[in-house]
Amino acid sequence: MTLRFLATDDSIDDDDLRRGSCLGDGSEPEDLEKWFMLFACLDLRSVLLLVCLIVLGMLVLCVMVEEFFELMHRLSAKSNFWRSFLLAVEKELMVLGVVSFSLFLFEQQAAASSSHNLEEVAELIEYVHLLLFFGMVAYYVFVAFVGALTLRHLRILRQFEDDIKGDGEWTMAKENELLTSR
Image (tube, rainbow, N blue to C red; front, side, top):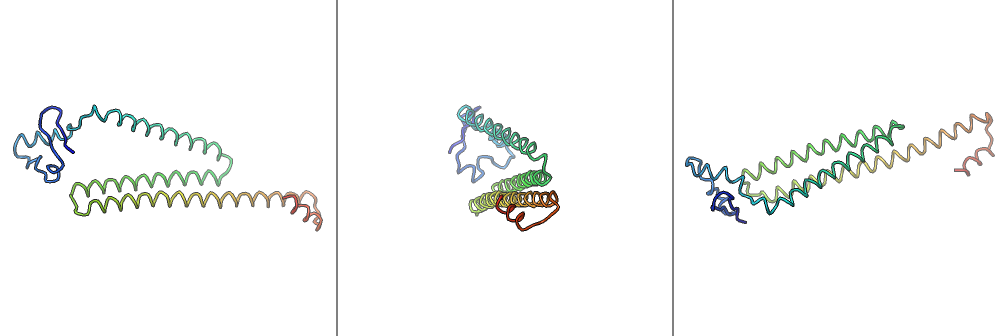
């Protein structure tokens, strides 16, 4: 890949970037000029549409996630368990975002220091990041399943208790009737 400067006819290829020869030692004015122009080296006309679509997609995804959580808050307003569960999921997503950002910064720092095992480290970081995310999703799916079953059984026991209190008398026929009705 060759980076072309928009303002000049100079170009920098991948080998120059790896060696750092395109930047010089910063003591010459032209080295400093090349350093500042490095940030303006991409021809934005060719990637502007792609960047705009990516940003638009991220915004749409963020709005959809916010609307989903807003709907979940409205649905969970009546149950302390589901409200607490939803808050725990939101907190976990926030922590995972912080971990993701930290891993990204670590990966960028490793790239800047030109570590010889950079590709292996980058792959390991991506693997750990995905593993953390899928582990969190599996954990909360399991907790939601167990919570839903627990709430269902509590509702059945409450109904059973109300049925017993309503009659005031307990018989084997009443027990069989309640067991077959469920």
